[in-house]
Image 1 (cartoon, one colour):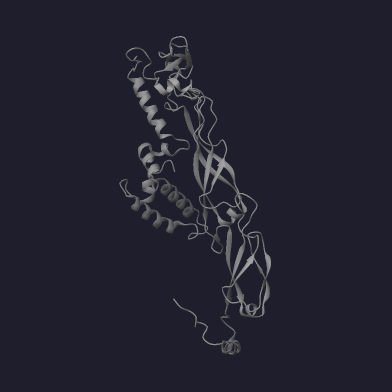
Image 2: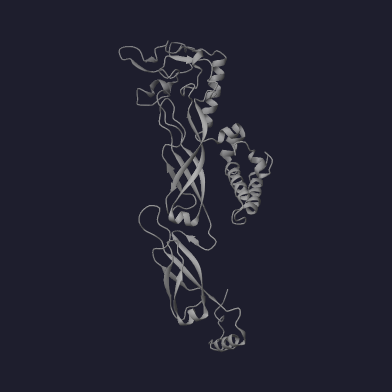
Length: 375
């Protein structure tokens, strides 16, 4: 999707309202949904593109980021605030910005008050290893896969430390001694009998800074690549569930650990099974004889076929419960139940003999079966 205009995917202009975007998505989703186009790979891919485009443009914050940074803003771990700050910092350096002392002493541009005292009171400051940002992507699975659990393969955009600049974001060939710490890598904090020192926030303790950004990563310190992952979605998930994949988020900085990847699950509805919390509902056709006389029938469940007894005199719409054949709880060992709704089927054929038999049955009704039907 990186090379596609998401507005064009949904067929809307860039000034489209949120309602326009929603209407366009619904229209296209109905047309290209896999249930409407079974076995059509082209329609399936089109539906994925449509869903991805709406996931971005239908969210106000994601749309704002996409409008400002384009496809780069959709990459895993992308930090808009950090990108803006990096752009401003490199612009300042390009103009030859130098440290300026405040009147009466103190430190200049690169050492704010909170930076100065962050180390003294346990703050992390800006120097040293920093963990990478967490990433998020959507994975769509069927209801049976949600019940049973499934291993699936996904493709994601990940970031790694830039190999050219080792994650610093700077052009090593343009490095000079840091003017904030005079190349020492540490700065004195406070004066008088009690003095402290801290890592220089401008150079990160290296004692050197660059005046040009790394040409490979553009100063970000990271490069993106596409990676295919095999992930396990646990049984019991539902639409909106989040599955954590450790260490597969954005790369850390200065040797920090990578973030995590979170899979946001979307469960497709099943044509026969209905889910309500952790219970399942299934319509089961039965013959007139099975309903009247009772019978033992075979029905499918997510765990395989089971034998169920239909009590004699069962009415159409009666529910039978099959314990423990519903959806497993995502946490814990409790499992929902499967409810079978009996649907009495009238024979469509059979000739005059069947019709005569039905007339006899019809005469056995005690009054109008709809006498208690009121709204």
